[in-house]
Image (tube, rainbow, N blue to C red; front, side):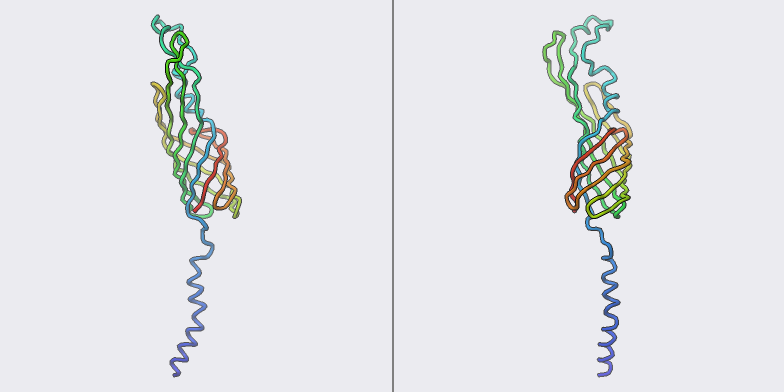
Length: 205
């Protein structure tokens, strides 16, 4: 009987300790572990300079070419870029640290004309960028987060007879996300992929 009473008393005394140990791993848990974001924006100046600098997107034939046949060749005009379309999957390791794996695409399209000015078809191309990024959140609130990010990846693409492939480097000095499970974001970016601003939406889970 005495052993039974002693066991009960000991159990009651140790219960708060076991309860504390059980709850300790739940202290300040991350509300979400992953993010999916899609965005649009920025001006891909490097893509533009690399693919358009060779003359493949001239608005008129090269009338000063030594070959007379060049006068009767096709030429391009109305070349456009869609701008950067981005999709990311983010791993949330800590409230201040994320790892993002992103795929970005910039499409080109233009109308081709013959020497007489009649439409002769279209040309399409594009540039893909695979960009892992590390994102640092320096202000984390339930609804508002401020962050910076830096990433290194690879870019490759083709338009008409021009191909490019190079190491991509992109930084976002400042970005903001507003929302909880579903959120919007906007950020300023500088790098090989784009220069300017990007905005979009995302979801956490």
